Image (cartoon, rainbow, N blue to C red):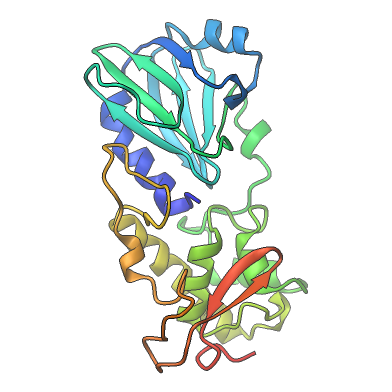
Length: 271
C-alpha cells in the first residue's frame, strides 16, 4: 500500500508535470473511482480548471484547482499515478485518465479498484480527522507520549491508525518498531519515556530515508515516471518472514496485529 513516503514521492514528482496545467478532459474506464460528487457533476466541475498546487495529507493527495475545488485522491492499496507526455496507450489496469493541456496525461492505475477520487470544496471534510503529521515540527516526543498515555491498544495498531498519526502504514510501522526495539504487541501506554523518545526518532528517520529513496516498490507502487522506488532495499524486517535479523541473526517472525501482518525480531524486540 502506498504510505506516506510513496505519496510524498508522487506529490513531489507530479508537481513539475501538472502545476499550471489545464484539465482538458476526463476518461473513466471505471466510474466507481469517483465517489464525490456524481460522475456528471465531477466532469463538469473539473474540466477547464487550472491546477494551481498539489499537497499531501497523510496518504491523500490534494490537488488545488483554480475554481477553489480540491481534487482529493486516495491511492489505497494498489493505486499509482503515472505521467505520459505523448499519445501512448494507457497501461493495464488504468481506471481513469486526467487529460491536461500540452499533451500530458495522468493515468490512475489501480489493479484492485480500491482507489478513490473526490472533488470537494473543503479538504477537512475528507482529511480533517487525520492525526498529526509525523514529519512536521509539532510532532514532538512530548506529543507522542501524550497520545500514548492512556492507550491500551498494541503499539503497531496505533501507528497504523490514521486518526492517531497520519501516513504510517504496516511496513513503516514494522521498521520503526524494530529500530526502536519495541515489540509490536506492547500496549501504547506501556512504553517508557525513553522508548517513546526512541520511537519518535526512528519514525522520523525511517520516513525521511524512505522519501529520499523514492518510496518502496514491494508490490504495485510505481513512481509517476513508471520507475520503481528503492526504499524496500533498506528494510530490516518488513515483509521479511524467512529472513534473519541483521542485528542478531534471529529468524524474523510474523504475527497478525489487528488484521495486519507484522514482522519483528523476537530477540531484539522482546515482549
